[in-house]
Image (cartoon, rainbow, N blue to C red; front, side, top):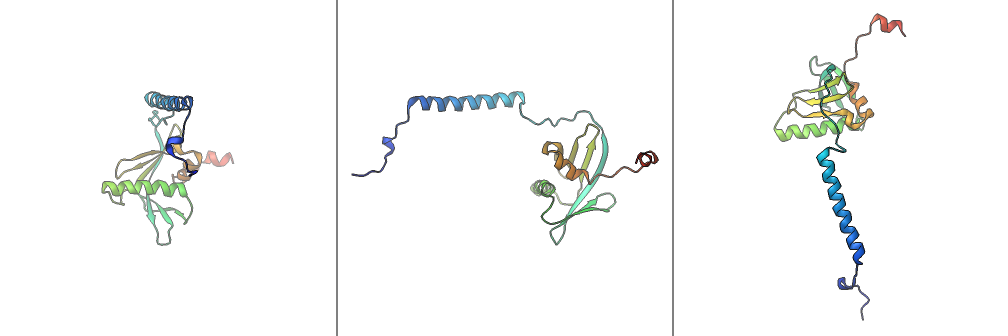
Length: 162
């Protein structure tokens, strides 16, 4: 005789099967209702704010693996992102670059970084029209990109308050 199990020997109690089916049905209904009323969806609609700072940016890969961040208008260097740092920025750019390649767009067009009066920070790909609401990823990611915005000129009043 063999002690091996056979599929025919497995018996699942009927109440457990009914409970599992009810759980699956409940999950599908809740997911469908959430989709219809927008529960859990990020609100990315423009709320009427106006742009308070913008900068067109170019990102250039360097031979050593770092990334050079330049102002697209002036060509001035803004930052160098060393190898193995700035993971969110690199991942964001990698995703946007993949879309550019898929759309047949080149690397030459800049990305537009915009700070809005309502506190939002957005990154727009001028090559293919993609739009990223950076606040959806948290404050650390907003800060990672916000440092590339132009700093406002210091005023005499700001100096006096120091």
